[in-house]
Length: 86
Image 1 (cartoon, rainbow, N blue to C red):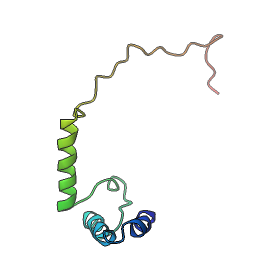
Image 2 (cartoon, helix red, strand yellow):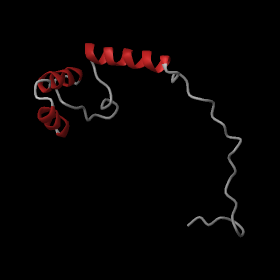
Image 3 (cartoon, rainbow, N blue to C red):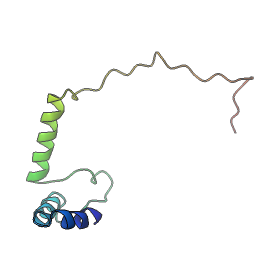
């Protein structure tokens, strides 16, 4: 992986530990390519990351999305007559 090559070059003393932590969240693999599983993990480290993310999301005020405002939307108006389909 490009990331691990970079890590071994720039942080050789930490690279093995980081690799093992990554593998521990992906059932021994470096990455997960299955749909819906790629950006998530399992295990103790994955739960700690999730908890920390939730704490800081709430602390920094990113807990809720703003209301969706549709009042500014105006459908496009054709310059002449009906819009073309093709």
